[in-house]
Length: 246
Image (cartoon, rainbow, N blue to C red; front, top):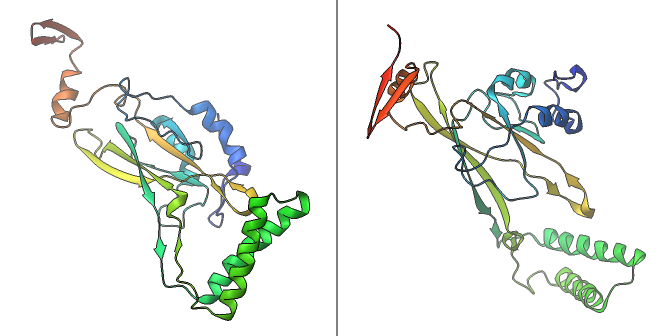
């Protein structure tokens, strides 16, 4: 399937039309499984959208490769030019804790939260807990407006438990495929903003289908490739006889 020229981004584009790109990804994608493939347990996160694409399709994504430019906000080519021969995923709990805050930011936070609750009350009557919470926010807003030092404050997203996913991949760094290197990159996630609006983001991970489907020794890549040139293999005990026509 070829890429629709109307969906190709320009250098000024910061957002990709994912609805146009997804059909191509769905057609080209492959499924990978631990044990069967050289890959760790797959991320179990509904907010993480990713596709494994064989290296032979990589050139079709050249228009989306922005080396040295501002990356797209909703599309990431995780390892363009470095097709993976093995993959692993892990997550980190990313959070910030800020204790020194400007009074204006505290009041703005309370004001925005109060307006959200009031907007909800226009469509549905608040329950007792929500009404109590609205009253508490009103009281806090008035108190801090009159006396900014009445409370110690702290901004943090710690309890939102935002998991930041990373992908670590091994790839051949030379054309002879005799030396492998390791690299890693963070992955984009769907995010939800105010009023439930979801911003979709996806990741494309290129894989080498010839090597990711079988173990590749960490060292001695040259030996691995050399023995592959012998089409006849006769195993006896722990030793195998390799033969090819002279």
